[in-house]
Image 1 (cartoon, rainbow, N blue to C red):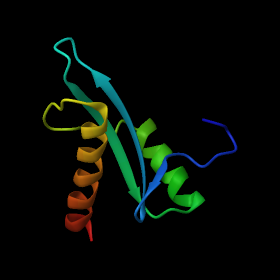
Image 2 (cartoon, rainbow, N blue to C red):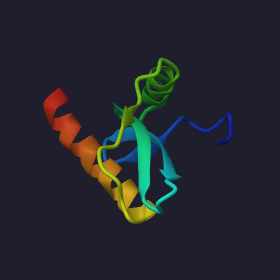
Image 3 (tube, one colour):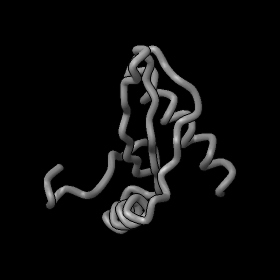
Image 4 (cartoon, rainbow, N blue to C red):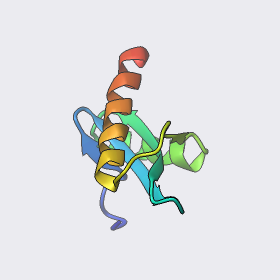
Length: 84
């Protein structure tokens, strides 16, 4: 990631960052963190949350990285409903 680029990936009305990992049994899991908004201020808030250890473990194991990323996006949308 370039230092000049805002932190995180824009998804819907959020900034999201994740680390997906393939487990020894071939399934996938991830840690992720998100913040509402898509502005540079949201990117900085997301970065601060990550550095403060506020990422979450994605529940479950998935067959592919693509399924894992889709599950992260679904989790963000669900969690956002509870925050608003």
